[in-house]
Image (cartoon, rainbow, N blue to C red; front, side, top):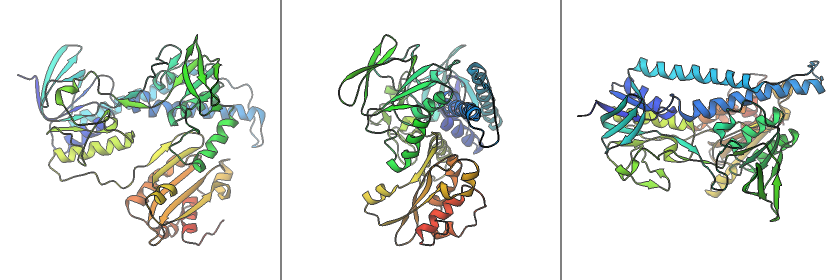
Length: 462
């Protein structure tokens, strides 16, 4: 006989898992959640939250350093220093507070939490290994929300000197030199932070440019910023392996080069975390390494669902959360399905990048006739007063109807505009709707209205 019976068992207490469990319990579904570590998953414990904390520390320190050399704002500072171990303790404190918050929310909702490692016995039964022994759970429905882990390169296995993002975010001293293998958003976010903290950083990217998933106009301000912070970017270059503690690469011209570094950060992607849970017992339909799901997040086995990173791109915490809510509603008997129009993505580089919906090139590839409006932050008063003039907001709208099909932005703090961008697409807004909405002055958001005014041919400030 199983030790526990429930209507819903959620495996993994990351953003998707814990949201699914809380929502299901609120809807009257008896729910158990199993997590091997602290609640919150990669995002809270070793991903989104710690990296944004490090970025904040780096930005504040860099600001002080800049004031030692330039007091054009009338502010001067002398001899600022960084104790990264203190910064890490501050970051860990935030993580602990959020861990406790998630635990409290689960408890308040009436979800039973079990800390341990789950293994499937069949599609309805899971064995959980805890510190106290082995328990079995029988459930009518099971949600797989086990997340993802960093990809390890065979020629660069993780070690004391070769780090994944997890280890890099736990460093208690700033390395003198760091090589970042992979010019995607994770590598550039962390690499830029360490450069601002004083490390000499080299980025090695196999593609012909960094952040290849974004168009060149969006990444140009980031490229400029990397150079400003002394970060060397080597494109069309391939990491070959470790030579002593240094990094050996093949450059764009085919020659080999040794980069002398203290630490090597490998950020070449993430893969689904499905090993070790006996997933093979279910014989699920897979899509390459990911679990294949339908518009209700159902897998090929009745009563088994999957959400979040294990289901593939986009690997975003907010996508996992939305999927978690959806599955809870389905299990509670509601006729819900995935019908999201917009899924915003944010790159927390310097400056930040936000995308939602179609870019101009994606619209053209779909044979859509579009009008594009773009407004630079150089013409925005708020951007000027905060020394944030790099970047722009761009709106892509259907040429005949003016319906907004996509929005992109690059600039300081544009992540905070992502909700407004997503809302516009979800509500089917036209450029006229946004242009006619009064935007507070002086704010960066005025540039959104101005870009829409340009779409309609009524630009005021450009």
